[in-house]
Image 1 (cartoon, rainbow, N blue to C red):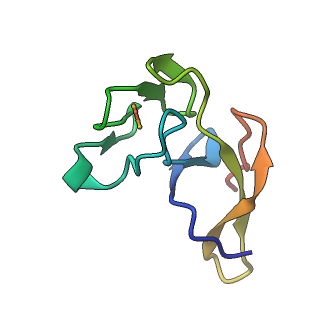
Image 2: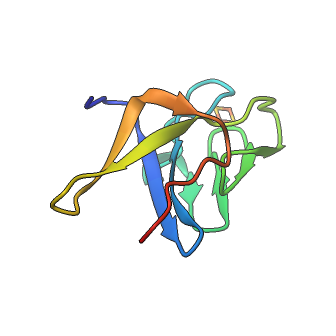
Length: 98
Ligand code: FES
């Protein structure tokens, strides 16, 4: 289940979700601050060439033309939240919080 694919997880009252942060333009790691990327609650911005994504990974501004992948989120019985970067799910998929 573990994967080296970088991803960012978010939890809100609407649920939990995880978005890959490898830019779909040319593959920069958006979460690497030394590359100038920005991963925040409201936006994901690649510092390499300026692609912008919404918080679900939906591409908002190029040069990228593809959304970031969304991954399955699992919660273990002990409450630990895991991101399964081997299982892509449709963009906007949420795991309900209880
Ligand atoms: S690699 Fe992200 S915009 Fe080019």
